[in-house]
Length: 254
Ligand code: UDP
Image 1 (cartoon, rainbow, N blue to C red):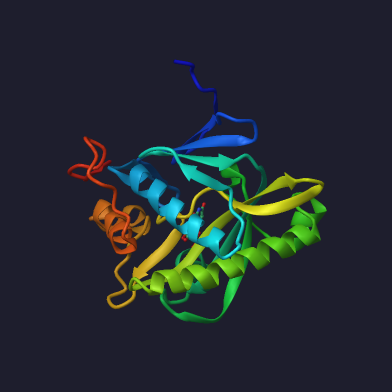
Image 2: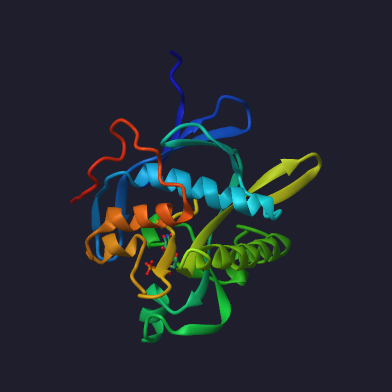
């Protein structure tokens, strides 16, 4: 068997060179980290579920002509994606006040926003991804004005679509974080959604009870983390068929 070349290992995923040029294999791990408060651990079965959820959401986005890097799921924990030049900006879209927004302005979590807010953060682990403005992004050459407009446009379209998708299964999309990449299509450089879309980077609250069904259960030590991820997958109708060992008896190990 030929060994694949590992390109990168992050907190939640490992990237391998794909089988064809211009492709990458994403391997979804069970590892979870939280910056504030500092915490790391394992959420059993998270990688399997996030692989499925991200496949599902990105496929639906593709169907409404919102371009993503997703090509196809390969197995329980891996998917094949288009290789893209990642733009070092995290784009956050918010519909309700939560998390760092609530902290920054001393607001109550759950307050609806009169319009969706789009924020940018520069990807720099050492500096805890500082918030930046369009001025910083263009002055430092991270992306140009056209690319920023395209990221905002795609993020807002994804927000509209995903808000409806989740509301249909009784879940409020409170906020989420996207990453984007550049790919060449013929002579044209195109911006596409990259990375993953899952409860690791979306705040998902039960629409009736406001129960958190996302990574905040881990970050805030609320318990039942695995159940929350499974609940999202179950409501989306994509809970993995019970594989041999991959998703049994989920429990949090810290
Ligand atoms: N988020 C993320 N990665 C990050 C920071 C934020 O996926 O490094 C997501 C987070 O899960 C939430 C949204 O982006 O859905 C907004 O996060 P926020 O700025 O409120 O920061 P947090 O309170 O999550 O640290």
